[in-house]
Image (cartoon, rainbow, N blue to C red):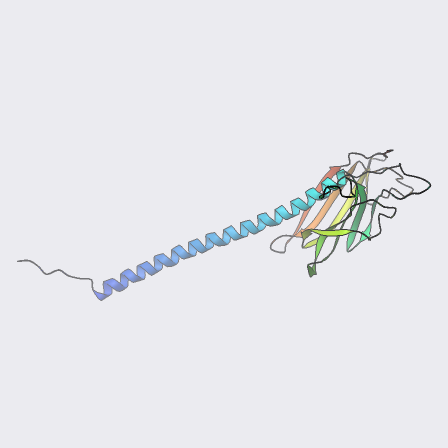
Length: 222
């Protein structure tokens, strides 16, 4: 005698549906946690990359700083400089450098420029501070004047930037440098130490420190 086929009972269906729901919830929790971890890692990586690019740009520009003693004394139209002073909310370093790259053919520009680094109010976000790079495409007789300058944001959410200068004559670090001053006239530091204080992607303070050597640290007479 053939027994009639038997289907699932309501209780069995409910148990199976409950097990599937539990497995689905566990899989979604694991998948969501993986996505959150991926987002956190990408945010941290992007922030570190932003800070490192800013440090690399400052190191590159500073390493190409120069002071020239060549100019027309009767009609002086240019003045080179390397000076650290206050600006914005902290240190401001202004210097002439062989770091400019003209972007247009036949432009009235060369590889010389005046560059300044400082921390000040972010022009795109007035509630935070940013590391700013201000530059003049041509060297004039007043490099500290803000006329004809271009400002770009190197890094956002920055607290402070400081510069220290290695005095080769004394074998000591100096907190300030001025090629027009009586202590270091017409000579550049052999090395510059850059310290950048910023916030990470979670708002926690981090500090980056690097050093760069100046290639033409003596007076250039051409």
